[in-house]
Image 1 (tube, rainbow over the protein chains, first blue to last red):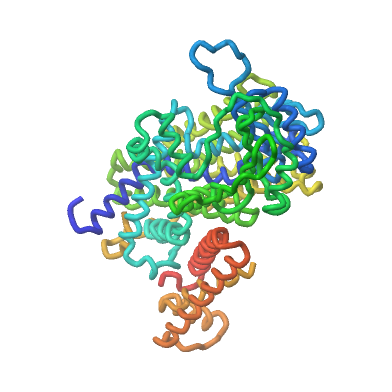
Image 2 (cartoon, rainbow over the protein chains, first blue to last red):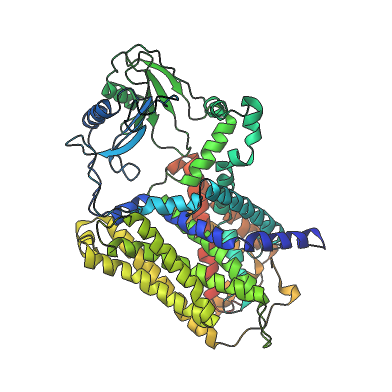
Length: 531
Length: 100
């Protein structure tokens, strides 16, 4: 790490980027797919079509009726009418009061519940036999990884995010000609091409990558700086939680102990929609339902911020009491906007695709960085490659191509695992990781150049098989989905075909490049941002 | 769509304001279409192209914000900018004289 500032930053960029680049790659891939979590959910359970949107005057009484039957005396109810991709079904949530010591067993009802309701019967929708982790499992892997106990996956992701941020800032510092080389990409120039590709992918999507990484850090701010909350609220976790209430401007509702009937929720929802406009009320939250102190919070839909505007009503009279702004103060506005931008819930179809495109560029940025590390260190004089080189090269093949093969395996398992088999959702995930591990082992036993090409072909076949197997096992195939204009199902199959085509082009390109003579290595003067 | 077009046009002008990319375009026009232009990019020409490029990008930001609000508009502009730069770099890499 000796030398000038730029050399030190180069060292930092190389090692902060390389050491955990495969976990970062995993986070980028699963996070990018996470922007289509609802669409993936739909494809993986085609037997459960989305509910038709019905007026609030119909859906809210159904939800209320269910909660009054199943969750009387709860601390909290949430009633979320079906609306678009974010809420494909009428959903209810309840949370019962915490049991004091010695009370366990007195009330055997579940302490919390989350159900999708059938608007006709008012009962929970029957779980389709095709149980699945769906897009939500892939999305959760983005920030929790998988197979990690407790919070360890989340903590590791937080560390990865910090390293990613370090790699980005150091990458900007070491890139001498960041604007001069903005449009530069030289094809078929060996390691120079890998460096150009890495630079182009990084710089062209820099605003997105900076936003996504910095907002990822904002997500984990409590993990990085817990002492700020502890300093003001002590080490009692319950007390420390009040920091959130104070910061976001929430209000605490205490139970009075006096029973009182709940106000008309439809009237409250209609009042909120009069304030915000039709279709703008996202959900109702009822705190202490059935108590004289009950409060109803109407939450607004839309906007970039993850902390939406809310209206507070008296739960017994239905009178509007106050408005809670989306941003109680500047730090909350800053954090809420960044988290909202990261999650992208506000994005319509076009912007959602742009998010996915930028996510794919980020994925390719990590991949090209990892490949450049090996391209730069590859010995072309016939000497044996170093152990570190062989390890990184093998894991690169097994992860950069192997992970997409594993994810294709996850989707194929959804269609091929027997319906009704115990632990079906878990086995879908096991299939994904088994395939990935096999892909990691494959380059160990094959010459590396052939392993790249053969795995790229494998990825093309696996992705291409998705719509084929879908057609053979369900009625939700392209023939039907295109004919009926169901663009969620058709879009999934067409995306799989596009991925198959991309991997086929990659395999053909790799086939050509292994036959071509090796270009001369970069000289020191050629380096632009060489890690 | 107008936002994307403005962004693409803005990034294209900024790209052409760089001498090495200007040379690529001049060579392409001369070799492929027989169009003769000024061989060298003058200082005035460079500043004019840059000013026009930044103006178009500013117009794209304005269009994005008007269409979708400040937050969503800026996010959309960043994505359009990415597409503009990335697409242009790929196009240039396929032009003759790409080794410049």
